[in-house]
Image 1: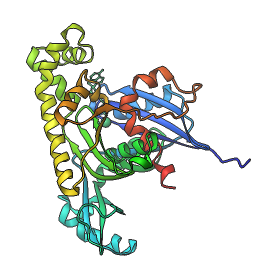
Image 2: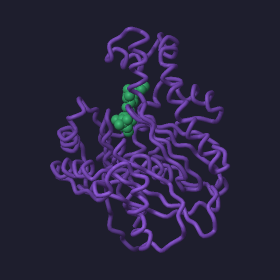
Image 3: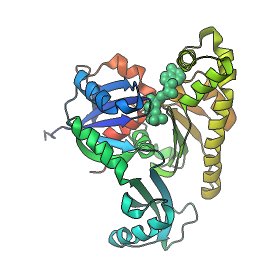
Image 4: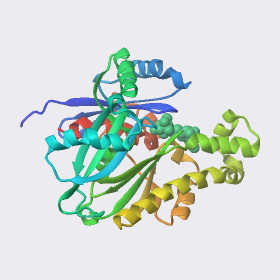
Length: 343
Ligand SMILES: Nc1ncnc2c1ncn2[C@@H]1O[C@H](COP(=O)(O)OP(=O)(O)OP(=O)(O)O)[C@@H](O)[C@H]1O
Ligand SMILES: [Mg+2]
């Protein structure tokens, strides 16, 4: 039997609320060989929280894939004339100037042509191109933090693409449902990532700047509570469930309205319907959110498990803790599998 050398990567998702690290090791298939979760005590505590998390959990690799997100990251889907990869690389800098609100010299650019199977008004001499730009300063800061923690960065991805990546890996593409459109909606603390996937291709992405923190604020304001009290009540409403649901409803409606704009844009642009809405992210744990969004979107809306049925190395992973945080792990799983997938 041929022995394949195991390769391990840590997917490190640094959110605004929590840090998640998932290590996946590939031999014949992926195995989860490391896991850590930590809430951030304050926004500027990232370096020490990452260090502490690595120190207190069992990881085998120092090779890490992280992500960026937020307003310093620009994602655009362009239609361009067909050209060679070299020509595209040259053309994209000029193209980028039109779409990016920053100086092109201040950003790191990446682009990738992709196949949309003739949908979305693409002529036979044209191709769709995904353009991603991130302010160089943001990436440099990430890399500095990782280096301080003794980690070796392999790649920097974008949250919303890692989400799609995890979905492909954990759920896969059912050939019989090839044309099915799944809307991945990851509700974090301060942002919600939307990725509309069809047959393993991400056709549309968007980041919405609201999430679980806005839910807590709504509860605090409506019920005259301190932020910490509202946060506790949100997580464990007990007998107060009805009051909490009413208090949070306007914030849920705001989020749903933004997501719906993306759905409508997509459905017009591609003339495709969205078949299902799949929720992840800590914010999606809000009691009843799946039902409320399902009613608003009028589509099946449910949570999915980004840890799929990957084997877990119980010797180095606290399986109970992992199971407690499954909804939050989509981005980290997507990052951990990123390098392997593109080999
Ligand atoms: N049991 C729960 N019920 C409701 N909300 C919860 C629960 N547990 C966590 N949350 C919320 O989940 C959010 C954090 O989710 P997550 O860890 O995915 O965010 P993040 O990745 O750090 O943030 P972002 O991606 O926005 O930077 C917080 O708003 C928190 O209040
Ligand atoms: Mg997040």
